[in-house]
Structure formats: structure tokens, C-alpha cells
Image (cartoon, rainbow, N blue to C red; front, side, top):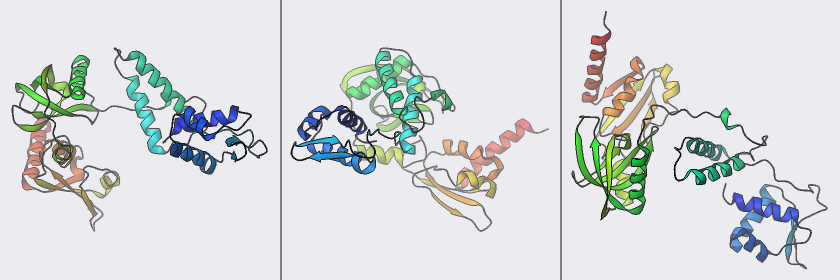
Length: 324
């Protein structure tokens, strides 16, 4: 919640004072501007019901001792669902960080998160063990290499990497200009300009075998171009979408799929027979193919033809393995 620290700090100031405090003194203690102070006071008074009174003669603010809510205490914290999910996710991620040079700083941040979570309604100190976030297919990576990558990313330097590609099992050495570090499906990817291919590419961090930071400054690609290249196609396989996949899901499976967001530009409709049709733009079909296959006979690929053929090849291959 915006200005949450200032809300608690002002509450503590007013609760502990016996005389009004001037607006200027509040600004100094909250380290904020006049406009921010007004927003904090209005939120406390209007949204949280705090009995804040302004005394013109003494030019100060105080909690009204004659109010029915005196002594006033803040209600349990008012996280909305998204904010609470974000805090819990942060707590979980920090708890899984490898020990290293940031260990003390991370411990302090964890402590701060615990204090925020403890303000949730109905709890004094939350038992984080009651929240479980399961990483699916999380691949291991080298912490030292990861630190080198992030250092180069934030300092705007080029990297030389040795990369072992999964799709063709090739090993290459290439210079890259890091652009964005992406957490996708519980794994890390590095979006970068590849000087070898003279193209934007996405590299799985766990497939980077070695890395060396160069003295050369990275070539920075405009944000708009990055978003257009990496956000418009299906999944991590980037590039401008060249195809549209039309998928018909059974009425039973539709109860799950209809609530899922496969792609920002997807389109959907319910068919007359109760099936659910999903249309997805994509460039590289490999990841989409994996998602289709996990639904088995509950989904039919309508088009494009080459995607239908790719599914058929997989089915034939499975039949060769499992036929009696």
C-alpha cells in the first residue's frame, strides 16, 4: 500500500503525543512533502476512521481524546489480494536465496516483510510455513555466474558467454549486450542483443556454461523494441508472431482453460457444442506444442496445418513407445 510506512509513523507520533504537532514538524519526521502529508492525514481520517483534529490556535494536529475511538489504534492491515500475494512471494523467494555476500541485508529485508505481514487482520505474527509456493520444473543454475550476469546487466556492460543450446545441443561462444533478466515459468532467462547473430535473443541462464564481463559498454535497445520483440509472441520463444493457433478444448477441460491467460493477445469464444476455442498468436511452436500435448485428447488443434502435423508426429511417436 502506498505510503504505508508514513501512515504507521504518523499514527505512532499522534498516539504518543499530549500536545498538537505542527504540519512542518510532521513533514520533517515523515521526510515528506506537504502534499504527501495531506494525503496521509486524509487517508488516516477518511479511510481508517482516525480521530485526527486540527487545532488552528496551536497550529497542530492531534488525536481527539474525547472521541469515542480514543485511544485509537490502527485496524489490522488492509492488504488487498495482489499486495498480500506479492509479499508472500517475496518472503518465499528470499527464503530460498543462497547464502552469500548479501546474507545480512536479505535477513533485514525478510524481517521487514515479516513485520508487514504481521499486520494482516486477525494475526499477530503469521506462520509463513502455512503458505507453500511450489516451483514447477525449476532448473538449477550457477550462483556465481548469475551474479556476474546481473552485475553486467546493471552496469551496462557486454558479456562473453559460452552457451549450450537445448534445441540443437550446440555449443557456441558469443558476445552479448544484456537487456533484461526474466523470470518465466520458475526459471531465469536473459534477453540480450547477440552480436554473433546480430539479433535479439533470449538465453536460458542455466544453459550458460561460462561468462566474462567485457570492458565494452552494452548496446542498449529501446524499450519499445524490446517489448515488441519479446512480448508479442508465444512464451519465451520471441519474435514477431507469424502464425495463429486455433485450439478447441473439450467442455470438461474448458472449465480450467477458460480461466487461464496463455497470451496477452489471445482471443476466445464458446462454441455451440460447449467446447471452448482459444486463438493464440505465436512464432516458434515448440513451447506451444508442449502445452497442447499436456491436455491430451481434451484439445484439438484446428490450425495451422504444420502445428496439426507436429501434434500428429508426437502422437505417433508415443504410440510406437506404448503400443502392445
